[in-house]
Image 1 (tube, rainbow, N blue to C red):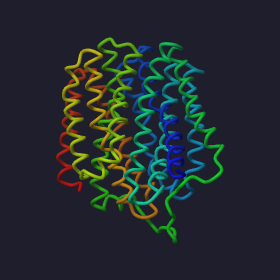
Image 2: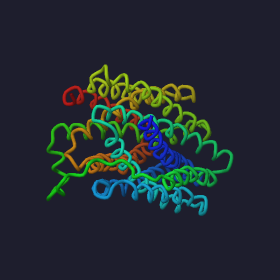
Image 3: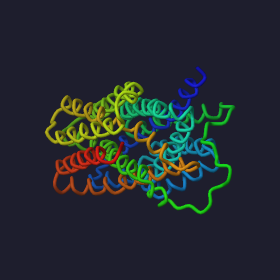
Image 4: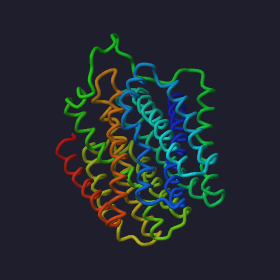
Length: 381
């Protein structure tokens, strides 16, 4: 019971921060379009969520390995709340650029610290299950974030939606302040590590393969939050319906992740990942043919099933393959790779979609995921 309550507490902290982050990404795209921004400008804005994390994630992981997660998470939750409130106080497109940077930087600390804590909590045999519960929390907040953002825009306006979103990390900050015992962290090595380089992690074959597969999956996941508001807006959906479609994606990830603790014990990890990527690739292949909210809901549910199943397995694989005392650093490397794709791919996707339409973007992403499924069957055991 004590372990379950601890997991529930950590999931709540992460989910409250993630609601603001994922909701703000959707609200930023729609607010920018409301302010007559182009598709390329929306791509720039969403890439800024990942720009600093791309550069600083490894350093962030090393800091959390060294000092523990408590102070970094507390500071990050406070910055999340303030950054989410900025567009309410100053409702201009220039403010969106600043808030996007701060939101991405703050959630980077939350994300890396939470993965470190869940990996450290319990025994190695419980690790994949722990990450499954973290993933279930991500699914809940990923579903709630777009719903809150979409209906808050319709009820309070675009600026008011950001103030609403800021309340969630503020609550998480209050929960963290009320905690008396330290947050869980990996055991520190007896002697501090000597000279080390991030490339050392890529020399480990299992860890390198896990990084590659994780990057492909994350690209499929994160581009959804960029492509869906643009595509939904282009076919005339309201903000509330766009939020509902995105919430169905998150609901599918929630449903599949509830089954993950049982699935992990019965099915090879490589099979789970490969099938997940193949299903997601097929979903993106069909996306350009969807012209109604109902069709988008069905495809979003398919994508959620595909992309949602693999992440807990990948995170456990990365943690298990990481050298002792460098687990958060390894998560930082993964975060750097993800944020590099989040920085440059929205820019490229925004440019391509402005010039050629969105169909080539969906199909390139489908090809990447299907190739990733083949790579997984060859390299991940």
